[in-house]
Image 1 (cartoon, rainbow, N blue to C red):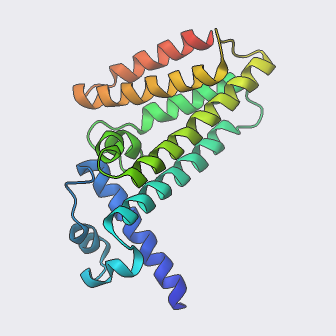
Image 2 (cartoon, rainbow, N blue to C red):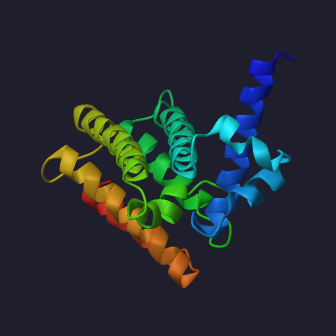
Image 3 (cartoon, rainbow, N blue to C red):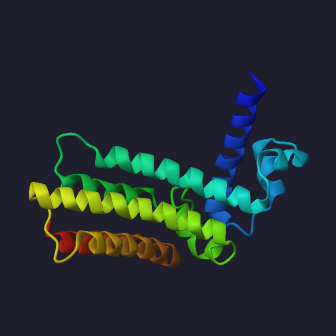
Amino acid sequence: MPSTARSTDTRRSILDVAQRIMAHKGYSAVGINEVLAEAGVPKGSFYHYFASKDAFGEALLRSYFDEYVSDMDRVLARPGASAAERLMAYWEQWRQTQSLDECQGKCLAVKLGAEVADLSEPMRLVLKEGTGAIVDRIERTLTGGLADGSITVDGDPGRTAQALYDLWLGASVMAKIHRDLAPLDTAMTVTRQLLHI
């Protein structure tokens, strides 16, 4: 295997391992050495792949949002389904991937959002950009639902999209606090009410 491909694979492995560990423990509680040991990468080679822990954090969040948005696009592009059906499938997937004990990297924005926003401005900006991309997709789907008649909203689709994302993000935090999926079930009910589904 060429060294460039090996380097890319190693970098990817470090990010994958870090996402899994940090989804469970948070950002500050995880040392670089723990990630490298779990990934099977020599300690001294971290700076070959990342300029600093902040650069590593930015890369981690970018990787997370790239995967998240690609997965979201697949769910929202379901052929033959109305915009309402596609959007509700997205929320159902959200609910199913929010394990209360270990989210396996599926909820990194929930786990790290408040923590890293205060630690690093570059990481905060990646979070802002990533969550903005999610809200944009929700808004586009709402607009499609208004056009196909499967959704109605009282007010601006952009503000409704932001309110829905905020609702689900908050419900995810509350589900973790209570160790109960009831907040996500409530979010589902409120979502249906807001969209008149």
